Image (tube, rainbow, N blue to C red; front, side, top):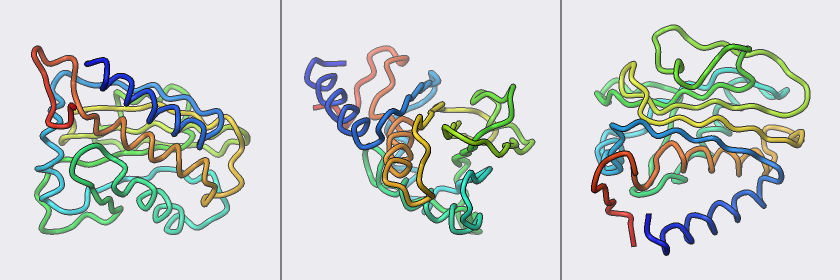
Length: 186
């Protein structure tokens, strides 16, 4: 990563962290991720997004709208849209799986498997595991935690964390690819 890109990423992350109070992110990039894939994904329409769990009193549908709304356009590259409804004409193998307060023993590595992940109700910090899947293969994943208790599903801290997660799910470059450079590098 160039010095300027590293500085830019640090500033973006620092700004996002201040908006999210005490949040923690742990991203993983699988060696097959190519940032140019965002153009393909965007051309197919909204990214099918599975939202598992709901740590708030809001209805599941309302919470899903909050999640996909916060994610919209938060990625690097061409802005993506997200939907919990699978579009019948969208033949893309890509989807996002996002689990809130996953049951113990769950891991981001398993989110793309066919069996649906499960969650649990929890008081206190909100934990989120998310993965960008290509079929049953994981391209990228993020584990995150919002240390403060969010006031509700519309809490700006939660929305900020969801935007950070989206940026990490669709990174601008993959250092695992030898000689990788991104169209997003400056």
